[in-house]
Length: 148
Image (cartoon, rainbow, N blue to C red):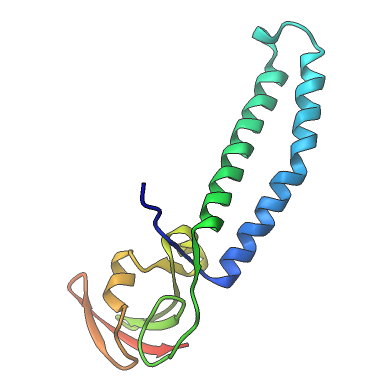
């Protein structure tokens, strides 16, 4: 199986490492909940036990996922700001409304925080373009105001 590298900003990598640390530190507490719930007796109707086991399953799955992401991570380096590239923050004029996005890899995309994936429709549309250029996006003109 060919492993694909995962693009992350340095901040995104740091956030994942922090989350991984917290999940690993929380393992003993989850194990304690399982042990306590097991002591209640019949496991087939023990909601506390089922809940703790489910929490453990979710946490362990996320630990494996983060470890895999970090193992395959390629850190996005801020480069020249003359064209929109991965890691750049771009200010767009979308029909009189200015919006600011940071172009990131799909793993750390979060539109509510202004982080869009380079694979998203608007990410693909602005990639490689320069400040001052107008591009067509969804039958509308979008102007790249600034690249930071």
